[in-house]
Image (cartoon, rainbow, N blue to C red):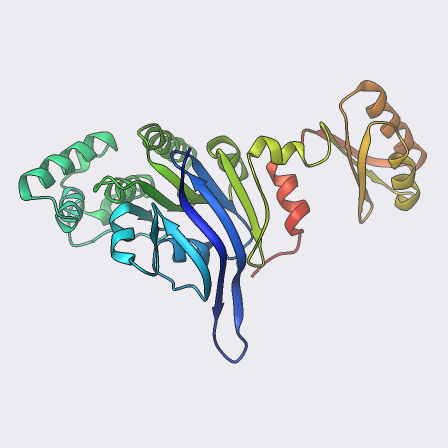
Length: 313
């Protein structure tokens, strides 16, 4: 697959009395037809990165090309090849559902007849036909998000940027939007999305990058990231005894990849064999186990390991 987004040594510094480096030397590629996810804590640099790719923010340094076009050299051409769905509601509240779609089509150069046909097609595709004459304020959150998605692809863009596409939606609306996004991907649209939902990233993304403090920490497929977390099984031992001694004892057990201390817990990454698991639990018994859990590695554990547990403003 050819790369349709290429980010090379991208930097963005917001000036001021105390300049803020939002993106610090990021290099990434997104291949044609894939769903690529950006994960990171609040303030990690995700929005700035997407803002540069969609021409809303001028970079301080580096280069970004979208479908072969430099975003700073020819932003108008870039805008014609992309669709954007922001987290906030950007629908025209003075227009009906159908008019929102029709107006967007006209804005991107379709004549009246073609714009009407395309608007009607989108109403059917995004399950909004029965709400064609409704005003945006009368739509549920899920319907509004489907309308924003329909409007974003009305001009048939090559790349779709989605910022927290399912944030705040109920489970049914969330699943419906996942299905629509998957359909767009199957039709050939490349998708770059930001999300805080680990299950969403795990199920939908072909590849993803975790970023923090403006830097890419890791970039790979969800399966590879989970495998790189250190083992087949995660065993968390909460004990009332000496956690340092427990961690040292566990690290000596064959099949254990790592044993990290967090307060009175020891988090163990190990191969999934009865011998290894029973040996880890036996070591925990010596330090008076208070609680124990055995789980599979997840994107959430990878994310927390890389970015930490501290709350972000």
